[in-house]
Amino acid sequence: MRVRLADLREIHTDIAAYRARIAQTAGPQYFRLSKFRTLVYAVARYHSSGGDLAAATRYFEDLYRAHFKRQDSLDILRLELAEYARSFTGTGNTVIRSRFRVSIGIAEEIELTGEVGRLDMTTSGGYAAWLLVQQAGDWRADPRMPLLQGHFADIWDVSPARVTIGVYDFSLGQHQAVSISRTQIESARSETLALLRQLL
Image (cartoon, rainbow, N blue to C red; front, side, top):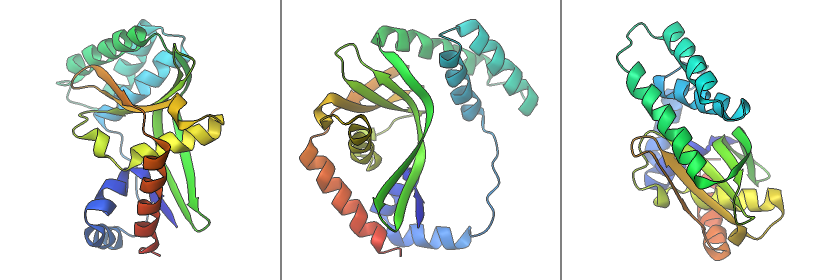
């Protein structure tokens, strides 16, 4: 069984509602580019171009104009891209990957999938994984966070204490991160696995 990481909050909150929604939306799912997604793509271009904000901005503008007739959000999103670049530069981190596809085999029969906006090496020699979000809300309570931190600690073969997990909130123009303890990670993994097995 494959489950989106982005659906874990709904599963933890109301697994019955999640089960009903999935049953109603069974069948092919068609991707539709959102305005926010164009911003995420532009962030990836910013990093792949070596931090060339002008090139990333041109890419964003071309992509936006090609997909959206109304241009009312263009200026706001352009400013948000520039603010992201400023905030990222302020971290001092080195980007390892952007738009990293995640697959977590939480059990032999269950796979969690999703995307992390950015993976960094930090100035202290540790690692950081970031989700890019429009508005973070209560992101520290997001059940994805401990699972992702534990996953990347395993990938990098380091203690979870050397990894932070966080968000970049475009509405605030801020990076926010925490480091979750190994005990909390293991507890969250067990709780999530117990819920997911109810869906089998």
